[in-house]
Image (tube, rainbow, N blue to C red; front, side):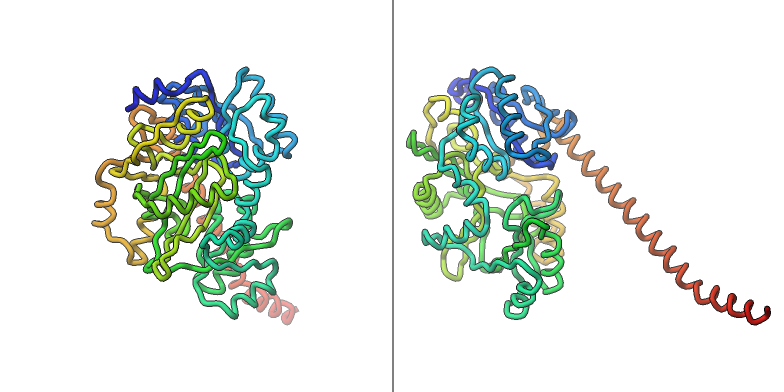
Length: 437
């Protein structure tokens, strides 16, 4: 299978993986580097530093150190052009986050001189990445989705809290609203949690927050769709699977996922993508509501998903290999999806399992059993160990730094308490001294 794919790919066509995020622990980018790098394709990831996990991968053809999130769009486009000149040949451009996908689509005319990518309506990535626009799009097209409300002030939030039933799902309208390291989606189980999440997500430039209907876990299932499509070449490759665990529990990133064939979801998604004229790699999150039997669209990511290596077909094709084959003029082999596998994100699954256990949704025996069988993990790899080592050290140091800050904070609070406790005594002594004088 590997030899077939290696000979099918045109290794003369390099790839640039581009992100606008400042987050260094991106296992999705690492998945692209390993997937195509193992096939002999030269993959150049944009990284924030030379010692980030992805930069240390043996399958990286050369990391490009750059921090585009600090620059305006015009500067980023100019920077991409500079990278394109350095690479010196037509290069396939893969956006790794929503903001990058939006920028590439809206500046496709300028970038086409150096890069190759699927052509799609210029404003489409921005529309589907924006949660309000996506909700309106689903309503207009008749695509099932959870009911939602949009609030832009504390007064509107108070009104909502008084008339709604908890829990509710709290989402940032755009990914740019989310502070570094924070979650774009959370569950508020009480009004106090709702107000705290609102204050965390709102920014001076965008105070709107989406409050979405909560579909209870006992009557719903989390489903994933990853795919690649290109109307110009009539290419469509789709994969469906289940998200078994997420972090934070029930609302975050995939910690453990499995491929599961779902023809109904495949056809529903194919109809949606063709209806809006989408082209490229796509990552969609659904929640199946057993109460009405509908697959409800939660998120539309107009780019590769972090868990792209969850899916592969019997010909060894995943979504990034399909993209490379199609854009280099090769045929994309269509074959049954491999189902006897699972994908685990090591740094997320352990804390996720702890949260599920605390809520009574998982046992220690069940967690251990879920790790057995053929699997691919996001970070650790025998032939490429440095990214996992780097990731582990970063998490360890961040944990130690957090613990030190917590100790210092408690120590400061303790000093303030002792100072306030002795203040009346000092005041009493001062009064007594004045009386004697």
